[in-house]
Structure formats: C-alpha cells, structure tokens
Amino acid sequence: MTSKRFAEINRLESKFTRSRYRFLAGLRRLSFILLFHLTVFLYRIFEIVAAFMPFVIISLPLAACLAFRKLLTGVPVFKQSRIYGKGGGELVIKLFNLSSSFHQKLFLFYHVIRGELAITGLSLREYGDKNLVLGDGYLLANKPGIFNLWYVRESSKIAHEGKQAIEWEYVFRRNFISDLMLMLKSLPAYFYHEDDIDFAVEVNLFDIIFKNYAMGEAVEEVMQSRGQGDPKTVYYVNPDCFNKMFADHDYFNVLQQGDYVFPDGIGVHVGCKILRTPLKENINGTDMFPFVCRMAEQQGFSLYLLGGKPGVADKMGQRLQRDYPALEVAGVMNGYFDQELESREVVEKINSSGADLLFVAFGAPLQEKWIAAHKQSLQVGTIFGVGGLFDFVSGNIKRAPRWMREIGMEWFYRFTREPGRMWKRYFVGNPLFILRVLRWKYFSFGK
Ligand code: UDP
Image 1 (tube, rainbow, N blue to C red):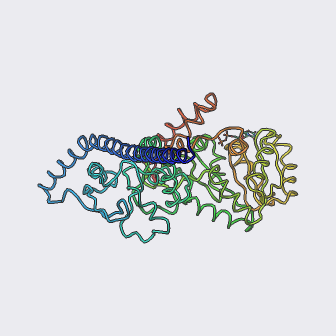
Image 2: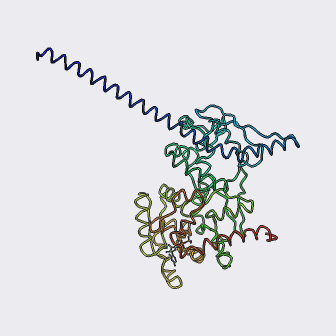
Image 3: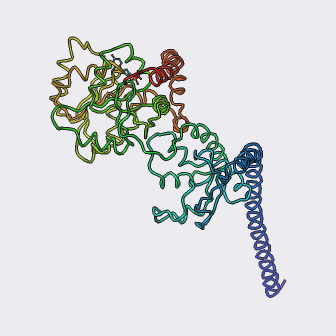
C-alpha cells in the first residue's frame, strides 16, 4: 500500500471514529436528559397521587362544610395568601377561612395537584418578605412545600441555626428518602406546633417559674449574669424531675431558689401547652452546652467538670480540648465521692482551680441539692446542674439521632439504651406527669 493510500485510510478511519464518538456522546446526553425528565415526571405523578387522596378525603368534605357555613352566615370559604412561588415569583394560594393555621392549610393539597406547591419543599414565605438575603435567589429556585424542614425544626422546639441555614440544609441534603422522612417527621410536628402567638415572659408550672427563652436568649442572659455576687445557678427540669419534686419538698425548695430554671424535653412542652402557656424552646443542658463552650472559648472563661463515673469527666475534658482548642478546662473530678465527708475538699479543689463555670453532673435531684448546699462556698461565676451531659459528651452514652429529637422521641431512644433504669421514668413517669398537669390545671385553686 502506498503511503498516500495509507494516509487516506487513516483520515477516513479517524473521521469515522470521531463521528462515532460524537454520536455516542450525544446519545449519552440525550439519555441523561430523558432520565432527568422521566424522574421529574415520576416525581410529579407521585406528588399528584399523594396529594389527591387527602384532597378528596379531607379538603373536599371540609370545603363542603364551609360552603354550608357560608350559606348560613355569609363567611367566605377561603381566604388568600401571597407567598413566594418557584423561581421567586408571586404565588397566590387559597387557604380555608379558619382560625387555626393547621386547619387553614388543609386546602393546600389542591395547589400540589396544580403543581404550584410541592408536598415537601421550602417553607411558605410571605411574598414581599423584607428578610430576603443574598442566596435566597438560589433557594427560591425550589418550590415551597406543604411539609418543610423549617416547620419541623420550629415545632420540635429543639435549638436550631435559624431559618436560612435550615432551608439550605434542606436543599443540599434533599433526596427521595429524606423527603419521605420529612413527611413522617411533619406529622408529630403538626401536633407540637404553636401558631404565631405572644409567648409569656415567664411560665409557671407547679409553682416553678421557667424563663421562657429561645436558646440564644437563654445563653446570653446566663453568661452575662455570671460573676455578680454569689454564683448563679442553672437547673433544667424534665417530667421526671417534676415527679421527683412531688415526693421531695427539699428539691422543690431548691428549684424555687434557682436563678435560672429551664424546661427540658417534650413532656414539659406538652404540659405547658395543656396549661395554654406554651414555651418558646426546649432549653436542656445538652443542647445548651455547645453554645456555652463557644462563648466561654471567646470570652476566656474556664470550666470545671464535676460528676460522672471515674474517667468520664477526663474523657469529656479531652474531647472539649479537641473540639474547642481555646477553651480552658480548669479541672475534672468524678461524681462518686462521700458527699458528707469529702464535699469540703471538693469545693476547695474547685476554688483553687480558678474555674469560672462549674458543671455538676450527679443526676437530679442530687446535683441540685449539692449545688444549693455549697454555692455560697464556691468561688465560681455560674453553676450548671447537667444530669447525663457528661455521659453524652464523653461518648459514654450515645445521644438520640437528630430525627428522633425532631419528632419528640428522644425519651424513647434513652429507654432503648437503658431499659432497666428508664422504663419506669418514661412509661409510668410521663403519663403521671401529664395527669398531674391536668390536675394542676383544673383542680389547683389559687395557684
Ligand atoms: N452520678 C454521679 N454521682 C452519683 C450518682 C450519679 O456522678 O452519686 C452520675 C452518673 O454517673 C451519671 C449522672 O450522674 O453520669 C446521672 O445521669 P442521669 O442520666 O441519671 O441524669 P438525669 O439526666 O436523669 O438528671
């Protein structure tokens, strides 16, 4: 073969290879596009099917009832609301003309069928919201949804990072499974949710006064008040603590004298909701601790850790040094000492460490009583009674995953970890607590 012919064959071959390559690449692109549209199409079918059932079973009968009401009273069936739709445009949605926000939203399935809302998506934001910030444009490329992460986080009352951060978290982590989980998490959230209301500054439950704070407010106030006179005391109370308080008058007195008493856990929230004085947030020691550490790190306050089994406070101290390098742990000590004979020595150790913040973890009511008995001899700024915190932070006991906390089931997780110790606390204690709340509500006079 002459070299000319050889070059000609080469040229034809490479041309053929190039066009074959281009053809295959085009085919791949086309199949991606088709797959994408097929997924969107299937998701849309799923949404229509999922919204159609509640629309027929709930929305239509309710609309019929409200139409009847209209005939009798003239009150319109619907009211309108303007929110941001997909792409940031204005979307006018119809809501049932009812007082509770939960019942109003029962017509939203109609907008899902129309494709204007998603089943799960971003929160429903009022159109013209002045709080839009840079980056919201990207977020608003997604549809708002009947079920949304902001609603779940806000209703569960666990400390959160703010609306914007939650919306981003939703958009980044979104997939089919997480959307299904979000729907499931939303159901208990509807039960816990509080409509926009004016929260009382303080809430009285069994003559224990809670400061009704969101986490940020609580941390700020606790940290600012330290160092003025005697140490400030911070206690957290859950239904189990209340049950113990009923059998232990000294504990009741100690709690009444606490500078800050915060509500811990979903049970207390349900109790306060029954009393029609809802709480803003769940302020438990475990959720508050990272905020306190961050602030202590910034302001140069040192910590003393007293409590837990031997080795637990040491391990916690090591973890704190790893997670908050600038935080000073002034000392640690386990909680198994003879409180009658050795407390003085322990107090001296804490004082000589020069710590600013003392965390005591003996469990309730032992820790609160110990704090009350020794606070005048302790030269620290603030003392926190923190129960099982050391076990969680040291990694000794795993804390419930976030999704369980979001649906108010942290107690159940703790039960599965230590069934022998916890069954009575939760399965007997929680109903007993609710009964006591009802008794306090209906039969306590002059409270
Ligand atoms: N603890 C202690 N000294 C005692 C009894 C208990 O240091 O004399 C510790 C125990 O090791 C555990 C914590 O106190 O780390 C109690 O945890 P629990 O979960 O019972 O506290 P709660 O959350 O119920 O207040």
